Image (cartoon, rainbow, N blue to C red; front, side, top):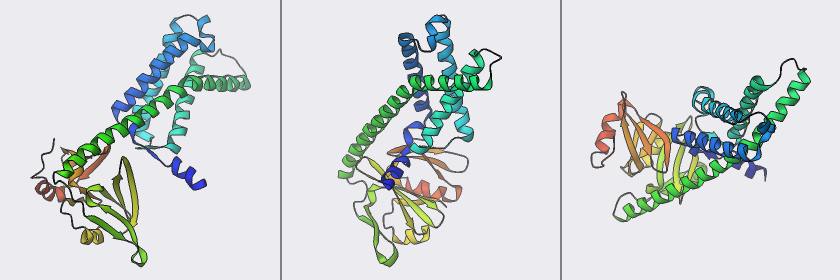
Length: 285
């Protein structure tokens, strides 16, 4: 049970990374909050005057823009996991509560009254924000699964026409036991992690990661598919799953099917070999 909970908390949330996703999140929460405030009038706002409806929405909107586009860029995680999204969401609501308190609370109150008022404001903000936040995450997750399913259908259709390699990549661990066996066309990319390698591959609509104690040197001696190439001292990639290749000063930045939010570098030293490997594959630049 404990391991199951830990696995759930460590799940990636990749659909919160793109600028589009952040804007959709902020827009959805703002629209929902405006409708909610107009219908239910929390904080006795209907006694304050109609202008406060817009002021509350603008404060929340500004707080989310600051946390999602500035604070997260400077200090936040590159990719959320469930365990990191929870405190991040609480921080966002806490920031809004602080702004509301500084803007609207009367002066000359005791510390106990200020704390009590802050907690009440935080609780009321949570009642407004948590529902649209959760609904958006649910929507984004379903949308990503649908997109991945469509890509898988397209990939399988291409696979029947001869693209990819259906042979097995078999990796052994200690005592020569098989640690992982997948078809080459399931492999997305490989990343170095110290003395280990992280292999990213898909099964159905799910993206998997397998940690294997092995060096790139050892792996290169095992891999037989010429479409799986080294592009960086820390990366190998399966070229059949490259969706975009954007040229940079040092080489390229690659987008990968199924995980478009992941950007993988092609270093200058591997640039020529990479370009040769893609001569027969038309790529958008």
